[in-house]
Each structure stands twice: as C-alpha cells, then as structure tokens.
Image 1 (cartoon, rainbow, N blue to C red):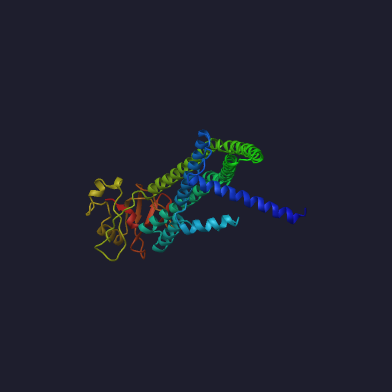
Image 2 (image 1 turned 45 degrees about the vertical axis):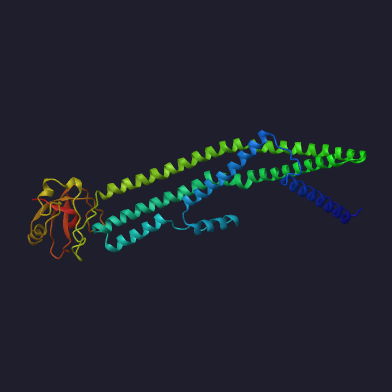
Length: 365
C-alpha cells in the first residue's frame, strides 16, 4: 500500500466518522435517538469553567477600558502586541494637560499669580500622568496578563478537550444505536466490539476533561492573588495622586479663584483675594475687606523714599536672581526703586534682597 492509498482510506474513514456523528447529533435534536448524559459532577465543572471564561473576558475588557479609555490607542496596542513589537510611548492626558498649563503659565509670566499657579498645577498634573503610566504598566503585568493567559491558554485547552469529549460521546451513542439495529449475529458481534471501544475512549476522554476542569479552582486562587495585586496598584496610584494634590494645595496656599478683573474689568493685572489665614484685623483694615493692599498705599510708598513692612499672602518662587522668593505669612521690608515696573517693589529680608510682586503682599501700617 502506497502513501496515496493510505491517505485516501484515512480520508474516507474520517468522512464516515464525521457523517456518523452528524446523523447521531441530528437524530438527538429531533428526539429520535438517545443521548448519553454526563455525570452531574462533570456537568458542574463544565458550567463553572464556562462561567469563569465569560466573566474573565468581561472583567478583562472593562479593565482595559478603565486603564486606557481611548479605543484607538487600545487597538494600536493590540496590533503591536500581536506583532510582538513594543508600542511607541505616547503622552497621556494628564501629562498633556500639565504641559499646556506649564506653557501657558510661562507665557503669562511666572511672576503673576495666575501664571505661577498654572505652572505649579502643570507640574502636578505631569506627576499624576507618570503615576497613571505606572498604574497601567503594573496592572497590565500583574492583572491583565494572567487573565489573558487563562483565556488564550488554559481555556482553549479545556474547550479543545471538551469538543473531543463531545465527539467521543457522539461516537458512543452512534455505536449504541447501531447495536440496537443489528439483527444478524455477526453484525451484533461487530457492533458490540465497536461499543466497547467507543465506551473506553469516551471514559478516557471524560477523565482527561475532568482533570483539566478541576484546575479551575486553582485558576480562581491565582486570579485572586492577581486581583489583590491590582487593588494594591490602584491603592498606590490613588495615594500618590492624593499626596500630589495635597502638596499642590499647600504650595498654592489658597490661590484665589476670584480676581478683581473678573467680569467688571477688561484689562489690568489680576489681584488675588487674601488667604483664609490672612483674613483678620489686617484684612478688615483694607478698603475691600479682602486683605488686598490698597492702591493709594502703594502709590504713597512709590512716591516716598522710605520703606514699609509688608505681610506675604502666599508663597512665591523667584523666577531669576533679581527676584526674592517669598513664604506665606512672613513679614518683609519693601521699598520702591525709581524706574521699577509698577507691579513690583523691592523686597528685603535680612541680607537677601530682590524684586517682589505687589499682588503677593499686604502693606502694614
């Protein structure tokens, strides 16, 4: 027998087996043939595996949406993963917002209240963006990858063996049907032999499938550990974000949300309201009751050659060596210098001296 004859006979045998299974399956659906039922334990294991697969896919998909809301980015990452290539690094939303804030603050001027606040907020947003990137990487490695490995690995093996069990069951029931229809002694003997073989193959496949399905409990235990890792990654992320915002809030002090040039004026330098800890007797002494240095006091100081004490309303970081950094609530000496910009005074603290923005000060009597 040559190889071609062997292949032809094998194809013919496979076609016969497929036809036999198809007939048996159709007759079962029509109620014209009996069906061997799986034992209750195996049925429960099959149901548990299917339930695990369905919910794992849903959790995995929604986690991916949570970590990467942009569908186009998810598709790009999927394509690169299938090509076994690393996706190019892209700037995330907090980082982009942070960069816009920093650029805007730089253009408005770091010495202005709004510009300085924008820069500080932008730096914090970029830190949050970095934390967001770390959350995605950690969650993908410790949570999504194990779930995906189950769907694409273990469950595919289970599905393959389950399909094989279904075929062995159809072969067994088809053999039972042929035995019932056999009348001649020789035919019955052949059918009984076929039945013993198919029964043995079915029992063997049922045992293999059962052993695989019992591993689902171990899968649940593994996924539980992965879930704990995911929760820990989220906890770290949100704790970092909270700390970043807490630090930002301290840096800003209570950066004002209202400016005198809000809706009633169309030009001029925004003048911040006082901090909560600056609202007191000194704040009430100002004409507006907001702790803002009255314009008349500034004019008097600029026209005189003397100096005055001033309370710092909130922190200010010097933009260059000609400026003086300030700390909220400290008291410094200020005086005017001929030719200096109207929005600035010269500040002095001990041996340190430099320009300071008027809007950060409250002149004291």
